[in-house]
Amino acid sequence: MIEKMQGSRMDEQRCSFPPPLKTEEDYIPYPSVHEVLGREGPFPLILLPQFGGYWIEGTNHEITSIPETEPLQSPTTKVKLECNPTARIYRKHFLGKEHFNYYSLDTALGHLVFSLKYDVIGDQEHLRLLLRTKCRTYHDVIPISCLTEFPNVVQMAKLVCEDVNVDRFYPVLYPKASRLIVTFDEHVISNNFKFGVIYQKLGQTSEEELFSTNEESPAFVEFLEFLGQKVKLQDFKGFRGGLDVTHGQTGTESVYCNFRNKEIMFHVSTKLPYTEGDAQQLQRKRHIGNDIVAVVFQDENTPFVPDMIASNFLHAYVVVQAEGGGPDGPLYKVSVTARDDVPFFGPPLPDPAVFRKGPEFQEFLLTKLINAEYACYKAEKFAKLEERTRAALLETLYEELHIHSQSMMGLGGDEDKMENGSGGGGFFESFKRVIRSRSQSMDAMGLSNKKPNTVSTSHSGSFAPNNPDLAKAAGISLIVPGKSPTRKKSGPFGSRRSSAIGIENIQEVQEKRESPPAGQKTPDSGHVSQEPKSENSSTQSSPEMPTTKNRAETAAQRAEALKDFSRSSSSASSFASVVEETEGVDGEDTGLHVAGGQCQHH
Image 1 (cartoon, rainbow, N blue to C red):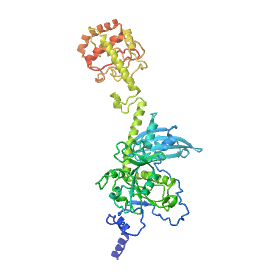
Image 2 (image 1 turned 135 degrees about the vertical axis):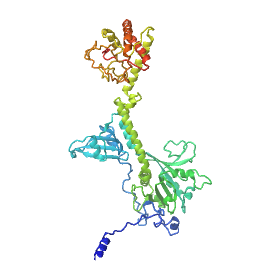
Image 3 (image 1 turned 180 degrees about the horizontal axis):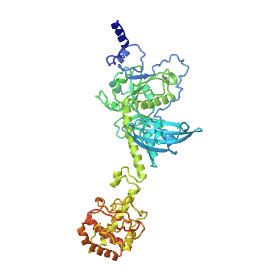
Image 4 (image 1 turned 90 degrees about the horizontal axis):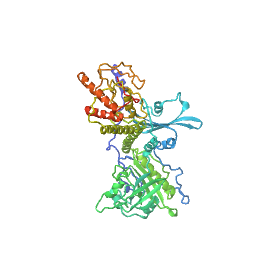
């Protein structure tokens, strides 16, 4: 009894396994083109490859139900070019209008460029948000009334993409940023297209047969004239689609069309160079095989199979077959096929998919070709390439916005570059170079006026506090307009270099053992020196100090040097002369920094 119950329980828990994945050998192959041609016609315009991989649109071409007196109707739906829906949003809603741009870097999403704008639609206030990531562009319009409180920039970005994970966005301060942004947004929009045109005669079922045809039937010539205008390639000024317009190596003529401000060049198989003895006709295939979309024109009822032409690029075909239409012009049957990973593209074919020659059909056909190329870009092979291209362009846009925004604030994109003097350069960097050249000119002037018997002084020497006029004269002669009289000190000897404008600083240090109190004022101003002595001062930012033994020996020499300074007719020149000698002692570039026209002492 127990075994029976356990057995029934096991039966209840059993589940059927999913069927194994089918391999190519498990599929029932479609009939080959040769098998179909062995049957009784009429034949379809397109046959699927034996193992599939393509989809077909437009399989009904029966027109017997339409009276001969009734004109064949053109598609009533308005044909529309399809493109990236977010590509023109910035130009339409942001460019030339008040809005804000920001940039940031997300660990997962990568570089981000964010645009936001206040919009009034009807009587309601909205926020129009446009966020660019390496994968796609997010766009949304959000009514402000739906928000409990007005969000900050990070919160706005999360409204359009919840995956945003950044602490802050940085504002774009570059006046020409909109030009860079709109160029990035519209890089997916192309105004130049090239399509292949393949002529398939009755009974042709292989690539070699298709590319070996040289003659053109009257029906094919009429179709080419309907498709565009025949142009001479020599010195052709329009979009050439990779054809040679100088040396004639790709033929002498082709078919060209300008449609809705878009230039289209057709690679016609019969007009490309023919090479005797070349079964593959590589001169023809290298152009048509590198196109993404091609038109196949059939004189008579012979099916076209998409895998007839071996190509990694060709993803979609529009097959057109001529049908006698009487005095009103020929009729054209149309079928479309594309690889499985290419999404459907419009405009949709009517039922039956038969057109009468005329401008409506021309507009429909050219629109179908352009939309086919845009749809093929979404196939796996092209989508990966587009994603890499987009990521690289977005990174370039991010860096441009960052560098220009930093330059507008007088900062470089990299602090280390700024410290080394090799930053991107802005107004302040240019100003630094001017001041440095002025300082070097002053040093050179001091060298020319230097006396042979001038006593060399070290950086540790100081001016006597009982001679304020000398310090004032030297300070006034070197003062820089707009320079702040106060400066934060980093140690007892101060920084060797100034901060913003590149004037180098020498802090004269009292060498006598008795130093004045820390709160003693300088001779020419009420500024109190707050620099206590420290034994742990940085030797990197301070000159090397003499030993205690040598201080007494050099005191008299420094006093004599100060007397020479007071006799000098130009305090600035003498000051520069002493500094130049000091540079010779230390072996490093040293400038002057006089705060508020004074020399501080301890």
